[in-house]
Structure formats: structure tokens, C-alpha cells
Amino acid sequence: MDSYNALMMSHTLVGIAGGTGAGKSTLVRALLDRFGGLCVDLDSYYLDRSAVPPEARHEINYDEPDAIDHTLLTEHLRRLKVGETVQKPRYSFHTHTRVGIETVASARLIVVDGLFTLWWENLRTLLDLKVFVDAPSDLRLLRRIQRDVTERGRCVESVLTQYLGTVRPMHERYVEPTRVQANLVVCNEDSVKKCVESVVSAVQAIMSSHSWQPSSEQGAAGGAIGELVG
Image (cartoon, rainbow, N blue to C red; front, side):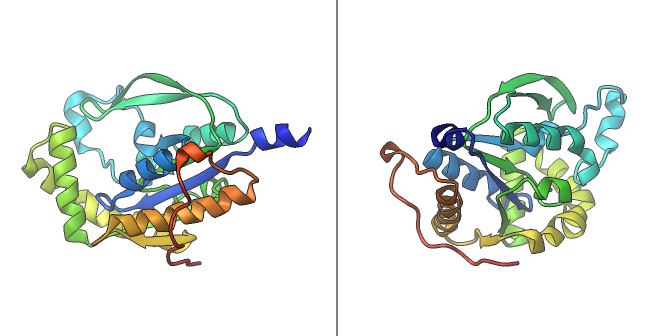
């Protein structure tokens, strides 16, 4: 394979993890705006609950890793990393079922976004950079309420009930412990710009090591590298 083809086959996978409302989606958008690429969101890989009676679906714990179709997710990431196209599920939070598929082509930058991105070892081994986004719990709760009410059609009471019943305890059990797996930890409390600059710089360094530079139309390099851990 010549150097040009080797360049075209270079794919960088970045994992973004952290609690609900920490600001993962904000970082993902910033990375895609800066470098281009695609996002593989764990939300699309929730297990299909069409076989469960509709009235029983609200009793399922959706805030633990077992709620995710980890096998399909990992298979898709492996295929995307070698340049293949995948059929990504479309998931409805209203019915808790899959409602179709989306054809997704690979890209030089692939960002994996979700609560449990750093939970599974075989997924972590695919990642070139592992980022954990942190924020105070009260701020994360406020962001969660705003998102679920405006984007998912839920009421505040329902969001609070789920948060106290499963979201908070599952965060402590499954999300917070994955912090130690990250290469980079950022705190999205006061200035999201600083978080973005740290992550952009880290991704820039990884992509540079893969012998690819973003085009001039995609802007100048990001800011300083944030706290490195692990």
C-alpha cells in the first residue's frame, strides 16, 4: 500500500464518557465542527424492547451498561475503524424500540459518545483517545431536566423520579469508576471553552501522529492540553 492509500485508511477513534448533563454532546459537536467526522452515540444502541409489553417498558433500568447492545456497538466500531460502512440503529426514547436504520460511512475521525463509553474493555482497546467529562452533580441534574423535557417530551416529575431511582446510583456504580480509564479528564463547570480547547488539542496531537492535518478551511489548531491522567 502506498503512502497516500495508507493516509486515507487512517481512522482516529475518540471516546467521550461522563455523567448525564456533563457536556459530552457539546464536546462532540465542537470536535466535529473542528475536524469533521462522525459521531457514534451509545443512545442509538439501546436494546430493542419491542418484545416487552409497552406498560412494562418504563420499569426497565436504562441507566446501566446492560441496557446497551454492546456486541453490536463494538462490531460497528471495529468495522468503522477499518473504513467499512455500517447500518446504525435508530432508537425511539418514546417507545423504547428501534424504529429503523441509518447507513453510516466511516470517517477519519470517529467520536464515540455516551455514559458507558469507557466501561467495556474491548471497546476501550479500539479508542485512540479516552476522555472523561466531569461536572458538579447539581449542574448535571439541571441540564438533564432541560434536555429530557425539551427533547424527549417528559415532565419534570418523571425526570426527577428516574434520576433519584436509577440515574444517580447507576452513575456512582458504572460511570464515575470509568474516570480512571481516561487519558484526559476535563471539568465542564465554568468555561466549556477551556474544556473544548483541551480536548481539541489532544485530538489534534493524535491525528497529527496519524499523519493527517485538517484543511485550512477547518480552522486553526486548538488550545492547550488539559489535565492528563492515567
